[in-house]
Length: 152
Image 1: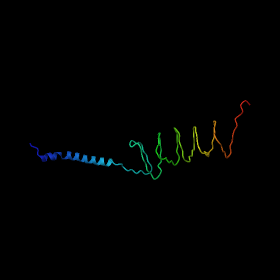
Image 2: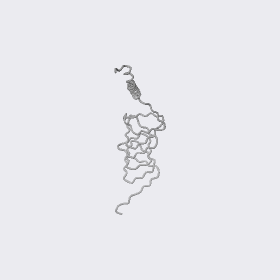
Image 3: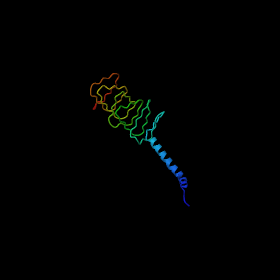
């Protein structure tokens, strides 16, 4: 029995429609996903993992709360403004602070080098040897203790 062209077109209409609609959907998806997607986040930001791009730029009218659970390296050309309390477990290398800084608790060794006078407003206790190079101006009460003279 010979197959007419009408029967052939009727047999292939659904597979052709599926292929054609798949091509239209793929072209639309490529067009939409090739542009950046603007995202507005209200009430904070939580990012579990960043794969691409390797850097992120965030523009915000209000400060964003940041919680870091692993080691983070921050670098850039502009200074990083930090408002509010910061808890640091360890610092590897030198840190330069060009602002008023307040430390509420400190465990470990501290080395301070300053070209200008360094005002300290706190109770300070020293258990080991202190070497001071230069003039010292002390205002307030100081309770010095003398070590016992050996051999007496």
